[in-house]
Image (tube, rainbow, N blue to C red; front, side, top):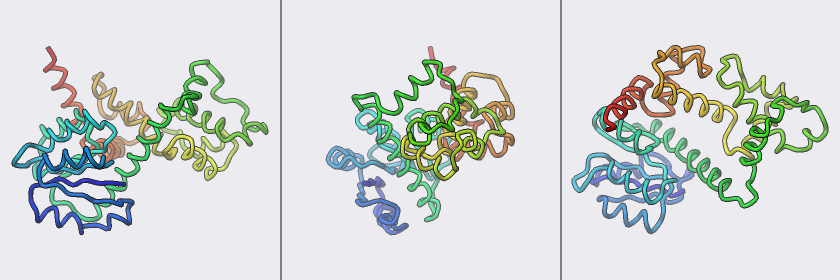
Length: 279
């Protein structure tokens, strides 16, 4: 994994190099740049999977750099750093598609957690890109075909064909989660019982075919649905939490902020501002 860190202060760049053990979390090549010009050159030459950039720099802003990266290398995972808790910066970060917006000063444990999450995001994006490029349509297309054809979401999975065909099990797992993720009583244990397999085996095949864990997939569905409702409905946060499968609004808020980087309330404000600004 190649990571580029951009900051115009030398002491910050040097400190970042030693703040955590980069190799231990999967970073084989940690690069730094002091200007956006240098950063663009490095990005074109080495194609880092993750770019961490300060927002406020002398030459131009990290926001502008992020926009350039997204135009040329859209799969790059971008993390923005700022010394200011600015709503406007958070808003722009959301619009660009930045994975994380972090406030300085950073602490080693916080940084390590964010980088590990970013590495998982890189793997997930690479996996999804591979699926899209497969000439034979691949697993994801078969999932969609299964759903669009109106096939039974809950077949008898006790048969030998299901026990010996992990891909069929993975397809049914995806379908079952999509059908039930809004139910707060839904659990991965219930999914395993429905498929008549152990939770451990379910985790193994789901990760293999979907590129992420069952919990990650479930949370992604819930958060994406919440984003949709926050931007298009007048439902309260409590109502949205319940609608997407969270029994506790405080837990929903924590999960949303962990995934998106801002609270549901701030996300809704950003969407409302953008809607009002449209001609």
